[in-house]
Length: 113
Length: 114
Image 1 (tube, chains in turn blue, orange):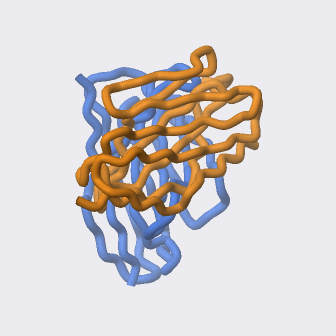
Image 2 (cartoon, chains in turn purple, red; image 1 turned 90 degrees about the vertical axis):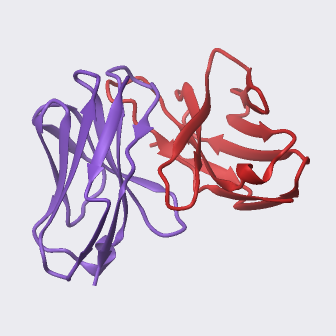
C-alpha cells in the first residue's frame, strides 16, 4: 500500500530565515505530487504540482519554490520567510491520470515569528 | 479556471439528524468530484467521490449526488454521529490533463450535538 510522509511535523521559524519541507511517497512510482497551504480556518490553496522529476508548475506567485529531485520526493523551500507564510502545509499525491484521487500527507504546521 | 462554491459555511445538527452540504462548480468540463473530511489538526481524508458518468453514489451513511446540468453536487450524511463533526471540503477536477488538479470549496464546519 502507499504511504506519504512529511517532515517536520511542526516548525517555528523567524522572519527572514530559510525553509525546507520534505515530502516522500512510498509504494507507488511516478506519482503526481502537490503542495497545498491551508491558513487557519480556511480552505486549501494549491501552491505547486509536479508530474515528474524536475517538472514543477506554480499555481500562485509567492515567496516559495518547489523541487522534485527524485521520483517520490517533493521539497518546498523558501530563502526568506515572511509572516504570511505561516500555515499548515500539506503534500498530496495521485496516480498519473487526470481526475484521480488525491491523498494527503500528515502536514507540517509552520509558524513564522 | 474552475471555481467551486460551497454552502453552508457552518452546519449544526442534532445527533441522528441528516446533514446536507452543497457545492456548485463553474467549469462544465469538470468530471471528478471528491469530498474530504478534515478533523482538527489532521490531514484531509477522502471520504467519497463521484465521476460525471454517475448521478449518485452511496457508502453506508454518506452519499453524494451530482447534477451535471445544474453544475452542482451534494454530500448527504444520514444518522449523524458526534464523530462526524469536522470540516468537509468539496472539490472538482477536469481530469483532462495529466495532473488531475483539484479546485476546492471553502469548507463546511459540521457540528453534531449529542
